[in-house]
Length: 157
Image 1 (cartoon, rainbow, N blue to C red):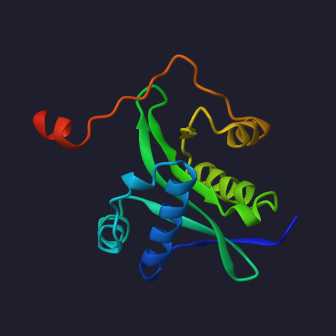
Image 2 (cartoon, rainbow, N blue to C red):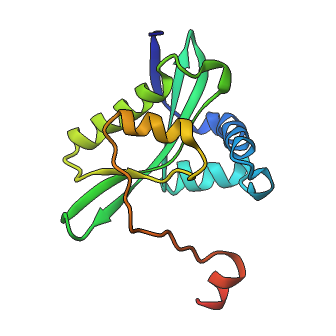
């Protein structure tokens, strides 16, 4: 395994965060859905502190990133860590960057007494699904994600 170092992103990393977001969106065949900008990243991640970003670094180069925030489970009665996105650049997959990012977030969850860690994965992404299962993650069968966005969100406000 390579010597992967995890670091927290700072405000000056907003352009790099956006670069990773665009690479992830391209991988997920959703590039046309990215509307984030450097300004919105600075506002929502660093000013409003709505999310946290980690980078996996190899030899001083950022090779992967993860974006997470906190949620709350009424059944567990405490907060959890919600992984919004995780992405490792293709040339660096298999070197332990994804595992290092997930372990770092699991450490955050354990150290803070959080009840669980959750995320979603596109159903066609077999390599990621296999990776998550190898870690002991369990697929939440019987749950369907719903979303209100754009015009529908406005119509319901």
